[in-house]
Amino acid sequence: MTDLSPEEAARHREKMAKRKAVQDAEVAEKTLEKGLLIVHTGAGKGKSTAAFGLALRVLGHGSRVGVVQFIKGAWHSAERDALAAFGDRVAWHSMGEGFTWETQDKARDIAACLRAWDKARELMADTSVDLVILDELNIALRYDYLPPGEVVDVLRQRRPDLHVVVTGRNAKAELIEAADLVTEMTLVKHHFKAGVKAQKGIEF
Image (cartoon, rainbow, N blue to C red; front, side):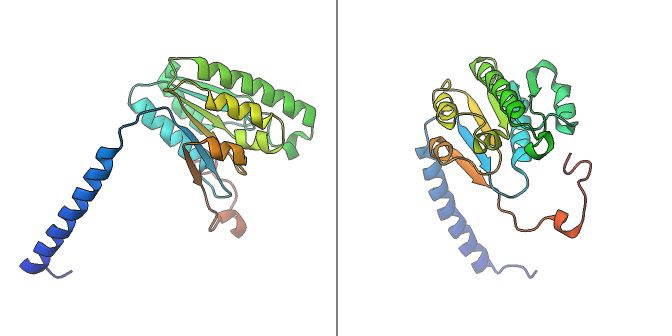
């Protein structure tokens, strides 16, 4: 790349100074601080991964994290092993019994989700926990293993300083409406389609 002329450098500085002023003014307007209800949904990969990345950020600030897995639980989780290094600052509960096509027992799936929801409510009531991750809760709601209205009401009425992340495809409309932040992971390309199997460190 060629060096900028003095005139080009001056124009760039002026442009960036104006942009900084706009950005600073916008940031200064934001004064509200509250616990957020965050939803990671969509067909793309990375919903739970993003939630656990947020867990690391919260732990980096010295806070506590609670995790409830509503569907997963029947297999080993490397994320759980990694976060175990934080000791009792992470409360992890894998309470699912696998995906519905694996269990093939709807009554058992519902019972497992109800137990997981009880644990989720317990963690949300624990004032020492600053972030609760409800992994694959959207799946439980999609299959009506839990009553969506009740779940959304409880999430709305959580204590004001608590952050909650809900993951899973097909988030219910009422959950999206109640959320403060919703990210939809869009599937553009997936290695499974090319015959690449699930791999250590990527899928598990």
